[in-house]
Amino acid sequence: MRKSLVAVLAVVVLAGAAIAAVPLIERRAAEQIKADIERDGATTLGSAEVSLFDRRVVLNDLRTKGFGEITIGRWEASGLSWPLGELLRGRTPFAGLQLGDPLQAGHLALRDLRMTNGNGRWSIASLVIDDFHLDRYDPPIRPDQFSHLVARIGAHLTMDRLEQKDVVFVDAASGDQVRIPSLSVGRYDKGLVGSLAIAGFEFTSKPPRDPVFRIADFKVTDLDLRRTLQTTGAPTWRPGMPIGRIDLGSANLSGFGGEGLARYGVSLGSISQQSQVDSKGVRHSLLRIEGIVLDPPARNRETLQLRIVLQAMGLKELKLESDCSGTEDRGKGEISVDRCAVSGPDLGEVTLSVKLVQADAPFWKAVDESNTFALLGSKAGLGDARLVVVDRGLVERSLKAVATTTGQALTQVRSDLAQEVRRFQPSGILITEDLTKLLDTVARFIERGGTLTLEAKPDTPIGLDKIEYFSRPGPDLMNVLGLSATLSR
Image (cartoon, rainbow, N blue to C red; front, side, top):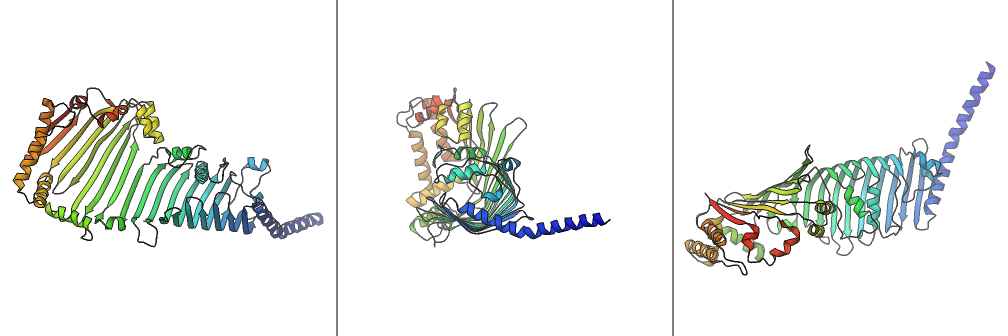
């Protein structure tokens, strides 16, 4: 019994001594972190704090000039854990984090983050991240490769949630400013973004002017940035080069405003986009723009002219909507704009559809890399195209505007325009019977209205590498394109 009591007392004494030693160990660890961080001569740290029981590290007033100039008022990481492989190499999170080091934390928080480089100045009031997991990565060699650093971190990072407050970027050359009051990300996995929400976006041309452009709400789901991170993280990448294709599941933008739109009396309701891949691997996309309104104020010569044109058409304001749908079928080697329409009340509707066929591996590679010029090296070509104009007042109002502004009679304007169309002789184009029929159909549309359909159905797909042909078309243009026109009521 006496021996047991002695053993218990010994354990209690040792535990008490260990607990009493914790503050000393924490202070020593904080001092070591500060010394290690400042060892490179380019970084200074006001103070460091360590809490062993909370697995927490706090850095106050951190300043570095490694990749531009970066200052952080407070950096806090709690719930820290360290990969076993790093421990076996003798590396610990208390030895001072370096670029390229891995980091795992249950919670990260930053305040008063400021970054300055050759491109401009960034500032973030606060940043909070939950379940932060950064794998080891290769940092760029040169300190001016800041975009490469961001891309490489993004390609090795996962996190459950991120929230930023009051993000501001000021361009170094122009002084233009971008401000985002609130940004949140739900589940980020090495370039795959579950959701992204931005509450407020403002672009201001060299403040203190009013914002040129503003968006109240911006929401995105299933955003895929993996190609972009891989491309921009490469040592050979430079700004202005292709960044790789960005895919997303859905997007919604609303609450547009700003001086740039108000100057011309333009308002916009919302823009939405959806994209999904079916069981056969075919991608279907839909884009819709709602609430486009043009109501130009009489504030200057340019907007006054627009207002006069609308009044001449008998319109107080111009209202439009647009929706486009497309399909990407890599199995069939086809990509198409199934229907892209612009419509307006008291005007009508204009619809365009285009299909590209024979899309080969170089074509899809160029699409995935967002390399427009590389498309010319593929065998893809125009399969067919259709333009449909449904008149519900468009022709009448347009001709009325011309008659009002020129002081002519409406019937005379209509007759003269139809006659000009019939007499039209494009330079260098063979005036065939098919071309004459097409021009006559367009002229009858001007005279009577209705629904005008223009179609291109070439016998052989017109390759993208032959796009220069249309800058100086040959006399066989009608035959090459397989053009035709029909008119219906």
